[in-house]
Length: 314
Length: 324
Image 1 (spheres, each protein chain N blue to C red):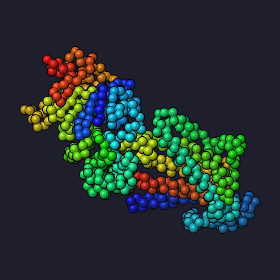
Image 2 (image 1 turned 90 degrees about the vertical axis):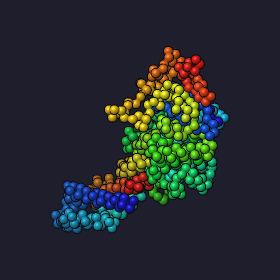
Image 3 (image 1 turned 90 degrees about the horizontal axis):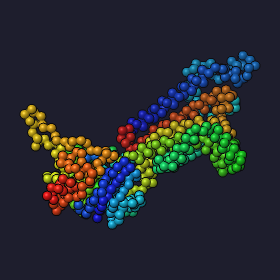
Image 4 (image 1 turned 180 degrees about the vertical axis):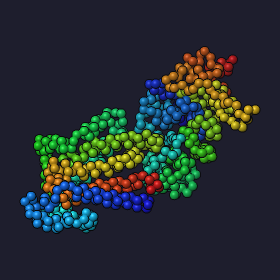
């Protein structure tokens, strides 16, 4: 167990290190001169040279990489070129928005998927199963940005139940929640369709196993068996997919925040790329990657919590 | 107490169990033998109300004074564990791998008997002791993968006994176990049945196991009960041609010494193979493979012939012999 934790933690740290190298390398081989971008085309050669020196662009790559990582570990991601304020502050302001959206999307995904998937498995080869399969097929086929527009048209423009976009701020929690509903649904529907199918097939496989028959022979109702015996045993593939989907949800916020005008990291990264705001883009790409790697790390740990047999082997 | 009268299980493709009649009383230890496809597992699953959903049941299945032939899931759920319980062939997969075995055994105690957690735990502990699980306190907290095959089968037995069933059905309970472990499990089942005055229905294709576990035996072939009687008598003087063939096909290294060429004589076999559900003959199921077949056999189902006060066989040839 201790060895398992050590190995997984080491893997986690090494992955983050590799990610940081790749992110740094990609950002720094991009064509274009950051100094020129900041000062504009009519800047003097002296001013450009001075700025390059100030930004540390003349240092060797390795020095700049170590410098970047060292500062980042201390919460300093440099100054945003386009906003002129520290990148850490920019991220700090927008992080709650994106995290709320991703977490509410994940919760919505998991609840909807488990109910649909287990429900379909319980009604295997009956109309309930077919209906679920049809709906989830539809959910997988519809692109999130198009679904967003349909949702806005129906619930905001026609029915006027929910705001079409924008964010009222956290001061009014009810208004904040209301502006999160449509983005959450748009973000999560595809993912929950995928997860519902995984849940269904995983549950069907477990339902064929002998211990389910034992539970039936012990006088348990089908419903009780589904939640007590089938679902826990079906969890390993479900958790694997959930980990991957959390990554998809976090990156999915880039599109959704732009469609719904939400002030989160997704919109920030979009603006920063348009403005060639290198420090901000670099920090955000690193952050998104770190979130994905962390999600996978947590999934690895969850396996052991779910299945005691892995603990013995781990 | 438990009675089948002309009980049949049929599917679109054929009849898996045909007009079976059987009575099981408290303390009875009855063996059911037959090849795969003989209907013995179908009979057992029917007694649990767990025949496949596509099956069409007819005749009578009387349990707890009620005909359960048309009963729904809820009706059966009330009887399982409390009236009839079952243990299965494969102890390695019969237990939920993610649940501690103590919790698994406590589940029915809490659900059916409404015991508190502490009461259920004490009861589970007593059950573990009764089925001979060493250091039961530690075992309660273990997961199935931490136990050996024999230990797991004991846990499965403890689970089946939890709510004091009147009938315990054991479907090939020893087939997956080592020979010496299997013997101890058989002896345990016999002891439990005697101590608890519980009926035991022991299903196996292993004739030695059945001989050790049971007093009475039912031989099945192709969905029919073909012969029944006291175990010792049926196994020593089989009367139905199928039972005779089945017993003749057993390897016996002691009784059959090597010949002059250093080889043992070839085992006698029953010619042909068990027909599939669709190809079962409409009369005697054994017709076509039977060495003493009469013209009547293929078309007419043989009724029961009384061979002695305690023995019955369903065979046209035997009927002629007895009445002659």
